[in-house]
Amino acid sequence: MISTDAQALLDHWKSGNVLAANCPSRPILQHLTSRWGTLVMIALATGPHRFAELRRKVGGVSERMLSQTLKDLEADGFVLRTAHAVVPPHVVYELTGLGQEAAKPVVALATWIEAALPDILQRKAGKGRRGNLSPHASPQEGKPGR
Image (cartoon, rainbow, N blue to C red; front, top):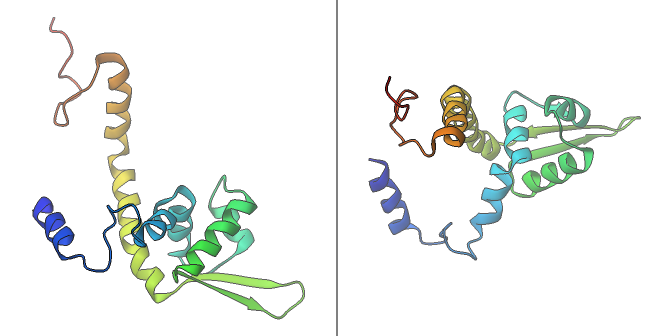
């Protein structure tokens, strides 16, 4: 059961507690779950990329945000940056072993979101018209009978 597992996790944390304001895991969680961090991890999970390739693959990210995201993920040990001594400079980014481990749940969450997207969008659209639906309500529930 998920709630039992979550409570066990809370009970057994010794070096950190993500729910505590000053927990050192919070910035790492932020790096992995930010919009750009998540998308960069997904892109790099497909293999090594150069900066420009990543920027094209992760639509909408600015150079500045991509650069900062890569620096954060590199500092956390998830991304390896390899600069090749050639002209023009050739830099390749790839996931480390730790990054590959971290990418698995990130990719799983994104995959779940994509699979659930039609239901999520339907509920989101229905909320504005009929108020809150219960979590288990079908789209037909809450509509007046004929």
